[in-house]
Image (cartoon, rainbow over all chains, first blue to last red; front, side, top):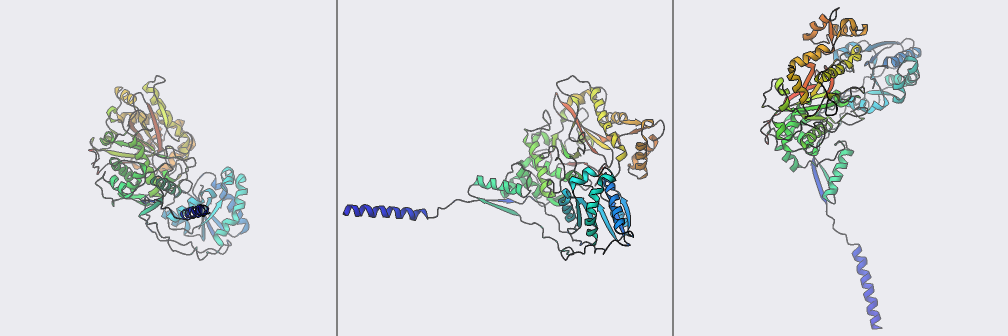
Length: 122
Length: 468
């Protein structure tokens, strides 16, 4: 009887230790790699908000710039016809030129128009 | 204003708008899968345009929102270091590589972590100050400093003795006269060719012989890759976001990079022909390649070990290559996608160069010979070709010093050259014996800046005699 009690107690204690140890946190190794940032810093620039919108096309002069990539003029031919159909009093002024027109070219194109489209064939 | 683009370029357009301080620029996107195939004629494109017109008009007329009207700028990135934590060093390096490619800070190839210790080691290769500003890198004009270049050089696996070469290459690419934007962003498969001259090439073990544009030489591969990483990280560049090369760029991870084989160059090293001293070391960068299949990558003119060859055959092939551009004559217009005639970069293998020298050619007379042969009789020009040359003269697109040549040739009995000048055949000697001669080309007068070839002297080297 005594031996049975000792064996019972030993079993309970062993089980108890096993349950206890299974919840002890194991210390894990950790490596931190600190690397320098390879990215170039971009100088902050002042932000321009878009110009106010026109209420509609009626009586307006709309500039259309096309950057000369092949086929785009066909697209703008249709857009021009459609805009005139929707607003018969609209005037469309077409411009074409380099991929990146100069400031002087842009100033000349936009000085007499109410609004402007810039078409990029990409 | 409303910006009209195709939808697969909308990210590029938004990125470009941010670059010029107009993040709220209104844009209308056309379906790319419909626009490109239907732009041949008005009838073909009618459906695409009709479907887009209401959106285009709405862009002009819908009142701006409060957010659109804001002029508040985004805070720029400014973290000096990035920390990566993992259970083991190997896991941390793996995580570093994944984070970097996920954030578009790497090229897709494995990177070495640019720790402070490693960057300090890299900087031991130059006397130049880490804070020295080299330039800004298109398209987003990130600032290139010596330290930033060193960080990217570490990532590429370069050694400190290569750093002066890498710095000189970035110096050339960021020179305001060099059109970097086009080769970084174009839909065409333009790429870079980087040629290194001078004593430093042997000291750092650059290949100039057999396999010159291939693998196996740490200097060639890591210098090229470091330049690529600099362009990605300092230009803030990424495929399909602002690098729109539709099929990518040949040799995109390292570019074409080699040393000239000066020992076998019968006319003296290339950099000496530009006025540098033989003991100087220099880097020359050039944009090469094109839009259409025949212009992408290299053209091999001949040579090799398989079929016997004669010098005249290779000369004829070079002329044929120059003349293959004849179809673009009516399209040459400054500032457009085909802005000018081409410059040709000829890499002659040593046997061919030595044979030409034996036949009496100097660098100059070779250039003149090719220029003369690649000229078209006035009587053989089409009306469109004549009109194109005359338009270019009237619009002052032909350099002043060449106007008399073109005016003089555009009449009966004249011969109109395909090249702006004889020097537009740029001659290098490289490769081994046996070898192939090959060539690349690009517009003589690019779109966004005056030139697409730039040479810079290598300076500040501490670990080599060359490049000091």
